[in-house]
Image 1: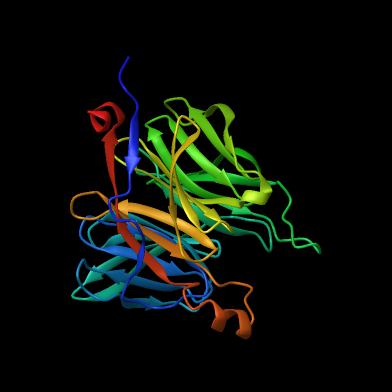
Image 2: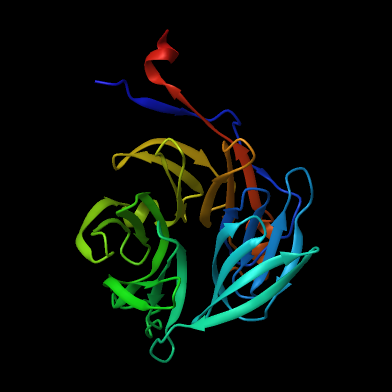
Length: 298
């Protein structure tokens, strides 16, 4: 049996990057050259090259929910119920033709990612009720490179982080229920099974954005807890503290593939709380590495 790996945080704290304070920062991504992320309510798209300050690249004025890199300077952006391509040309982001996803009135797209075949996977969410909660009637929607749209799995309240473990297995966080699901698909991406992979008890926070590194570790942002968890086989093996509670998402990347970029939010804050917690809504960066537990013991 191979010895288990444990996670060593080589940077003991995440440090705020030289960039904006957002209301609801989300969808950090590494495109192979630079980091990207969103401020959701304003549809603001930011880019940061390693060693430089963040730049505002685009502001649509409409709610945006996720970015998915297609390569350096090429991304898919979701806003409201539309998907569109972005292309960086000469320092300017150009918006290319968009696809409108048919959703009922008031419904929205939320977090998403690229599938193994280049298709786009994105969660849909129903409008919140009078109590502020969303019914578990949302779906995971697949949009192929030919524009074909399907909903392979459904029954989710607030779909967030998505990440592929392998070419047929998708992890998916439902913040509305506190469950991270593991979905299995056949070669045509029809659902074979959906099982609970892990559950975050409500007092501990909500599972939000996630990323999977090259070693197969799952990095999960826990909203309300001020932390990112490293998870293997459904078990937390390390925690990275974030100096503000509303941790929204995490990305793995950097030139060596050993860096984390973490987004946070100050949504729902009044002026007093916002002033008292100046790090809420900032973006944080750190470096991580994995270490074989038996090697560490010598």
